[in-house]
Length: 185
Length: 247
Image 1: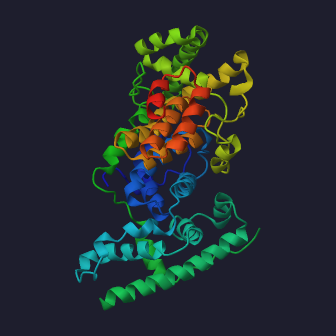
Image 2: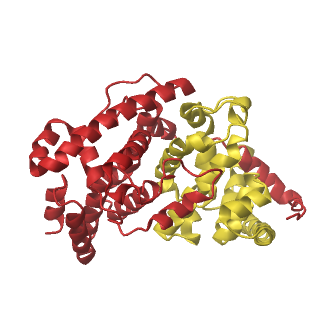
């Protein structure tokens, strides 16, 4: 947490090409969470973050400083996550590890409510097929534009839209289901 | 293509997502560990075992200097390796005195397609980003053309840029093998081969793969990879390791 600097540092999509060090300091948490949301298992996260930054370092010369940094980084992280999934042949069980603190009922403690909402989202995301999860994560959480997502994932724009729509619907249902289950228990 | 932007999220999801977007938490110690692991990339070649020096690269200008330093260093290595390839086994002794030379010798000994991964398959996952990687631009055949006079400058430039990154990239494989996690080691060497299709540490990566396969009990695959290894690196530094893992 201490590394993540101010909001301005976190959005350095301007002018001069940032140094690798500056990107690491400002965007470590971004990369970490993108990979996690895209389905990298918690035990592999550190390695995959490492790999992502190795690629960032290698490709830094390709980065156009006139464009926002975040989508470029998210694109690299996405490809790392996609490769990871192919290599490990993990698919839907990837998120199985997100739930350790929320095994039973949610605590009545209000202080935990925020964390619990995030946990709920993680668990709901985990129920989606990877293609739909990617669409929701990249658009609704990482805020990439749909044409950029279509290009990144390598599908027609209409397909990307369709995945997003289906993914949102599934996510809504899953969140609802999980919430009910937690309220009952 | 002019589809409208997607509809807004429904409010219940919106709330969940907004909170997730603010997430900045990391497991304790994670950022320190990653900083340590990536240190060679922060400092240019300074913290690589082979490097002479380089101050911390906090500015773009420093990075250029570091790159130039690496280019010089690698040029020196390439010169040594040309001698090495002529002298054959005799160079092994030189390598033991100067480990960095061994790295470059490995590079030059690479036979194309040694890992069985096609260059296009390697390029594909990364090809769709904002711009093609200049390091890869000369094309996969440059190294195998057998014309050192023209290929060495390209290879040298690429080598200078990538060596530190490769070291870090292969570190995962080394660490996984050291702790006996064969599948992680295999995944990491596979990943290394994809990230650095013309990598200078390919011999070591291939050797790690053989060891990992053997350790995982996948002996047929280990022997096949070992045979391929011996064809690719008949005088390779890691030959003994490979022979031991998969005789």
